[in-house]
Amino acid sequence: MIYTVTFNPSLDYIVSVNNFKLGLTNRTDSELLLPGGKGINVSTVLMNLGIESTALGFVAGFTGEEVIRRLEGMGVKNGFIRLEEGLTRINLKLKTIDGTEINGQGPAIGEEQINLLMKKLDILGEGDVLFLSGSIPVSMPDDAYRKIMEMLDGKGVLTAVDATGFLLMNVLEYHPFLIKPNNHELGEIFKEELKTRESVIPYGRKLQEMGAQNVLVSMAGEGAVLIAADGKVYDTPAPEGKLVNGVGAGDSMVAGFMAGYMEKHDYGHAFRMGVAAGSASAFSENLATKQEIEEIYRKLAY
Image 1 (cartoon, rainbow, N blue to C red):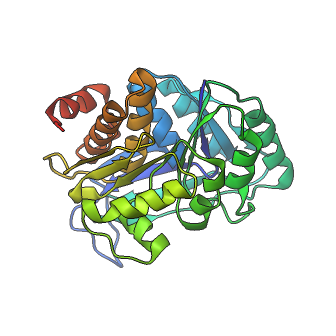
Image 2: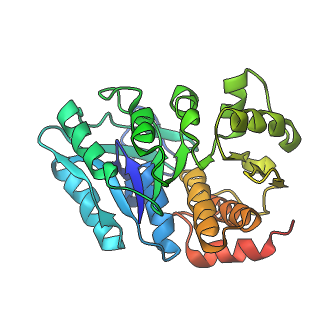
């Protein structure tokens, strides 16, 4: 079974406002309401590829119930823990001004609720896949990912970790199957500026030496690089296309890579699927569909 964890999911209210003006009443030209969060994005792309997963995490209030309702309507299984207080956050994304967002805080998560999630994860074993994606709410201890990885160590679970800084470095000793920093995040770890695909390779190998099995580095318009567990390096420039929406592209890349690996257990195929899925989401209003991924996949050549 495949599981994704989103500690702090959201309802993403995505709007466009032509001629937006500060200090005045503005009216939307389009509106879209979607369940959001990095793990949820992974589950959505997997579902679009015909792969079942169970979304785990925490929800609260009527907004949390709406996240669950929408996910179940899309075909994603629900494993969320309901909190008695607070509200699942609403994130406002103004797509007509690139990168403009207002993200909510989300509910407080207590030790009792964390323990409930740990019990759900403790049943995972050989053949299961777990995605740990995104930041950790301020109400949770910052070693949450580490504790999960420690609990699952030696159980044969394939883990994919898409996190930054301390959260990422803190799990490497438990040998995650896949990590996906972008070039800026990788550069921040080693205090280097990494602009080319060639420049990220030695630092990806350093993360392997620290414990990661596969290091997938996304580089936006520069393309992507995979330093694979078999010692090979795969890289490609970015596929041609118009950037429409960068939100969720990295999550789509992780989902595509793992979907490709589970299909053929071939790193080249997995890399191509990851790049195709990430690019397809970036070139689309919403997260990538199977058809969009397949179209880009066919154009990629190594």
